[in-house]
Amino acid sequence: MNPMAEQWNEKIKAGNAHVHDMLSGLGREIYFPKEGILSQSAEATAHAKKYNATIGIATENGGPMHLNVIQDKLSAYNPKDLYGYAPPAGKPELRSAWREKMIRENPSLEGKSFGNPIATNALTHGLSIVADLFADAGDAVVYPDKNWENYELTFGIRRGAKIVNYELFTADMKFNAEAFRKALLEQKEAGKAIVPLNFPNNPTGYTPSVEEGDQIIKVLLEAADAGINLVVVSDDAYFGLFFEDSLHESLFGKLAGLHPRILPVKIDGATKEEFVWGFRVGFITFASDNADILAGLEQKTMGIIRATISSGPHPSQTFVLEALKASEFEAQKHEKFLIMKGRANKVKDLLDGGKYEGVWTYYPFNSGYFMCLKLNEGIPAEQLRQHLLREYGVGTIALGETDLRIAFSCIAEENLEDLFSLVYKGAKELQAAKSE
Image (cartoon, rainbow, N blue to C red; front, side, top):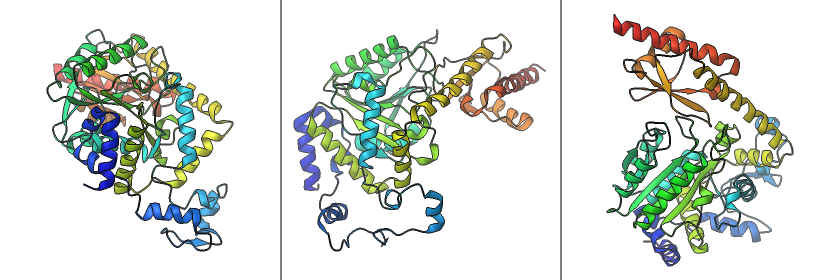
């Protein structure tokens, strides 16, 4: 093992042996090279005042070389903020600005000890870093039956982890704290679990109530007290899009400093929050009361980034940073929030209006981009999806036998009634065909 990796492992172990035990084999071996090209280039940038012949970019006239066919379209930005490599952990100003935003939007973080957000190539990249750092073959990854399918690829296929699902909802459509508890406590013998908490949930658009959030914390505490090391990942992809009474903060704030056997990790980003999906700017943030643990996890995260993508896209980080600094940012974001809320409320009004009885119920939704229909018996979700596509040009997502996900985020409010009428019509046609 590289001496630098060993050094950080020892510091992490001295800070909290449980966190050291959470690391995967790769997580223990990875490190960020302090004597490599990047560190030597950084030293040269600080001290090479005559010629800096270190980093692999081309320069001209004192700045990064560039093509005018590109720069003419981006003339509002200085070439130095576009063309050079971003640091592996991201632009320092952006990291600081995102940290300030996190505290402002999550008052429970005030006074808590957590690291500086590290820039990722959006949220999937952040989740894959978690998988690399903490998941070995056979480790349990515990998340609900209503989930984003990429979890299986990220944790199961890539890292060989064992996927453990629990039912998200009780019979009366509340968060199923008992099923969550049972799934976690089943990991007592193994002594370790990775726990993604995705709220607002994809695919259902559900965020727990404050009371349900407290139940989740209580279950995690019980599992930690039972001797299970928990990497708890707040997957906050749709953070901020809370339309009704629910948690309006990430659980990351309540998890920070909660228990020595709980390592809180926050995965978030501008992707969905700031409506810049193609920019691919996300963040991963760790919480710990120990400075060496935070530093060690940052170094290992940078090692993973260096070994995979080297660094994230510089222009996107600049664009997001400038947006966060703009005086109009909050007002413009709120304007889009109201549009999204209007669409969600319209869907709920339509579904509760009694027009679509006899073919479906729906899972609770109060946030995010999506809602999910639970189709009645005899209406297979995949069959309905194909029927809607072929006969009416309507695209939906079939999940399992009964669930049909509908993204109201990409349908104008005035078109939602027509959309659901067509879905209802298609479902009734399948019902009628079955009865013939």
